[in-house]
Image (tube, rainbow, N blue to C red):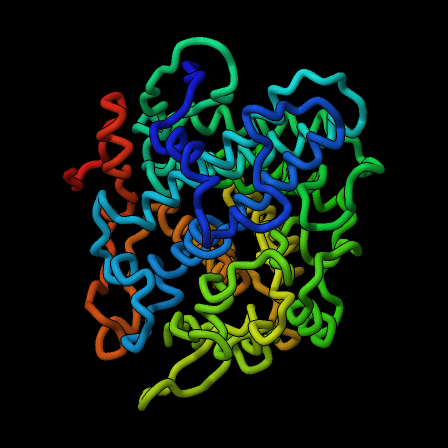
Length: 481
């Protein structure tokens, strides 16, 4: 596999401009990155660099809003109210182009986080348990970013693994040597790097969090790494390995689902990271001193914020009255219209805001169920499907389906469980499904109701500034620069 050893044009630009951003999350304390001039020389330096790496992920151009919101907005779970603040309109209306700022920043910020990970991985200080754990986190973050990039900007692995993916870069710009402009690796090559990084991280991270490190869900843990591997293997279509990774988490991770409705409600109402292995494996901090404010995902969703990203009618209709997840959607009005508000992110009135859920135990269980089903092991597939479905809805009758009907039931439970967490679009693309977007008439600014499997806008455009600066990067079909 050919791996480029330098950086993309937009990521290089980030290095020159990040320190001059006067009103972005980059200016918050702690710093977002260790600078080129201040190499990682101690465990403490590496811990600071790791904290900065996570802060890049939290930004609203990445998982703090856009990379998460797009997964539901471009699918069939949410739509933008016609009464809105002019945020994200091109993506709601499927009119985004190669010059779109949100698409450019999605690419740029992901590669900037990868650069920070590469610096940590490439540091040459002596390895101890602290260093191994922190480097393991950097490998996991790099894999997370590449999985996000390849799923937004490239054809799914399950559709065409030989299609152009994204440039894979594993060395920071700090290293000596001439700069090169990397071309796009294939989708298969990108996945090979993702899975290699995750397997390296899992092998090198001690099972116990080292003393230098806070032990909570704001940081990758050993089994959060394995949960991300399960997701990547599922998206790749390697169901045997997805099953193996998910089963590792279930059998050895020690995680649990909420035992009662009250516990489930309290879980979503909380603003602090977990230390008890309930529901969450990994989530991004959104604290009082470091959140995205009015630019955050929570602010766009919550009724107490802008409340302009609304739940589609057909999504709300999926939940029975006894399903505890329905209480995470509020029935209300906006203007003269009856609407449904997302209530997963409900703490907009607090200075300490909702954590951004990245990996949850429920997803691992559903990955395990789907993997078993696609491997024709109906007994185990039903066991894990019913474990989740009957936990969330005490009136839910046990599923007894087989074959394609069972797989469809699992995908339905994934939609219900993971709604508004950014994964729905990837389920639709990896299964190569056409879909209909609801509420795109009177309640939305434009009509784009049907997304077919041949729609070129299932892929984001490679940013035109990247292509202008790097002639080795090709554009996705359907877009012009």
